[in-house]
Image 1 (cartoon, rainbow, N blue to C red):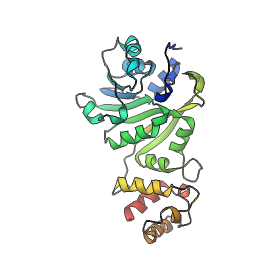
Image 2 (cartoon, one colour):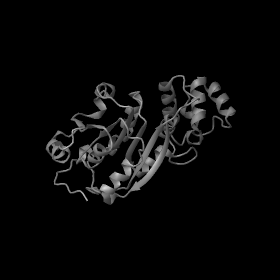
Image 3 (cartoon, rainbow, N blue to C red):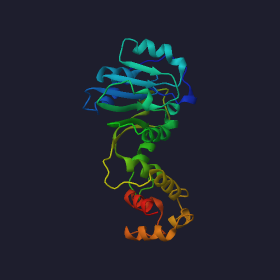
Image 4 (cartoon, rainbow, N blue to C red):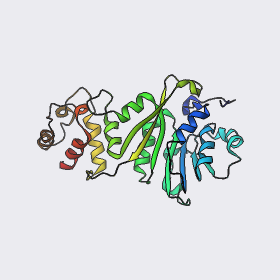
Length: 264
């Protein structure tokens, strides 16, 4: 078990892993490690970073808390294949930051700060950087939301958007007792593998706006949530897929949302 002598900062969502066995299980999800580059956000105490540096060719870390510099150096200083950028990941240009690296396989593997989980994964999508796989530790309820199917209560706008881009798999649960300080909830490791879609959106920005509007008020019907849209077109697509304007967004599958967006 890893030990830390630090003052943890709530504003950065700092909960550091302490069990090396959990770290090894995370890394073992990836099989193809040849000519590889891994991006990690929030290395914290470096427990995952060290395992990544041992298993992959290069590791690029983003850490917003500059006060961790000495702590990280004491734990990962022996490795010459780690670079740490002390900036807010959400403000960085990923493409520019990795342009000098040579790699064949690119991965994102991170115990991300929970308060910015969705913004991080949406940034990865919008970067258009070709990741082979994204592996994130998130709150268990968030992992349920990401991977839930239509018709379930957890299914929401983020479920639809992420499932458009990825095949999503919940890999394993990580108990809250594996962290310091101990968080209030358990976590889950989730992997995202990019989909090779044949059914694509004509305009992904409009698709995402449509999906967010459809779920704006979860108890309301599509008719009420999309009153500003051409409801004749929306209804014709819904009926083709076995739905109608009185259906709720949580009942509608991803392909139907794609069809609605393209028809509009």
